[in-house]
Image 1 (cartoon, rainbow, N blue to C red):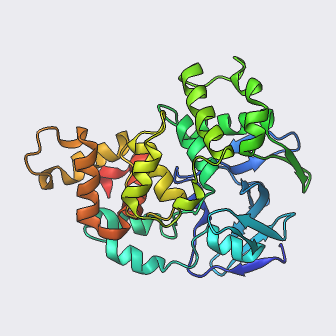
Image 2 (image 1 turned 120 degrees about the vertical axis):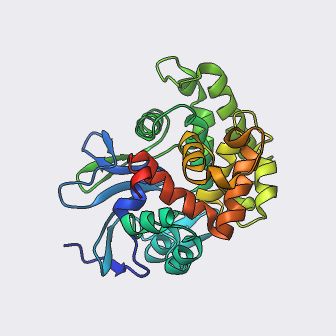
Image 3 (image 1 turned 45 degrees about the horizontal axis):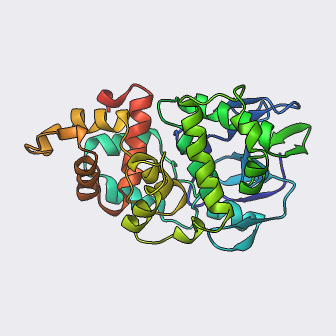
Length: 317
């Protein structure tokens, strides 16, 4: 058992969190940098690459055990370095009263039952730049395919850490992304929407490198301001903007509306929607409904029910 540990308080379920669909770099790596998403190693640890560092995590009811070559991590949203233990607490949102959140969103039996099933689920504080690129790749892709594509990009454009007998391909910095843009454009690296999607991504990366877009400066800013600034870029629509706001910029009221959330809204809450003509096809209407119904932590409610939908158990809750 690893000696490096922190108290698991509030209780965090790494299994439920890393398999929830909000993140793509947690799974199992091997000595060649090959990656299997959503599976722990045989020793019970999750392998991850977050904020540019390899990190291995395992939890039980009392502790979260960790191993990493880093002793501290730079957090761009905070513009400061954090000790590795404080970084893990920040990343896993351990400063947030999860039980209070669970209580506030328990508006009906569906959410209450989902919380019981996926207890310990947290919303991660992910690195904003990688989160933006990850979700720009996400349209019409499964979580597993997004994870593999990000690993492929990391191998092609990023650097690699050798740690614990494994190879960890690190997602390229914005600067490395631009320097190796020709490799990104190469037809051997395929994205679902081809050259247009790649050009949109490169424009965002270029804006970050040139200082024209202060993405990290949006951390903690008002929700609508974050959405307005993100959707200025081609390739970033409302759903992607909401994902970035929720999973990296601390806007827990953000509710990304995808096919699962539309299905959830229609099947569980259709009777509460009133006579809105376009119903679940109206993004703004559905997003506002979730915020009105669940309140300031609507993003948590969405994530619990999203997991139930992905697992095919939504109607059994």
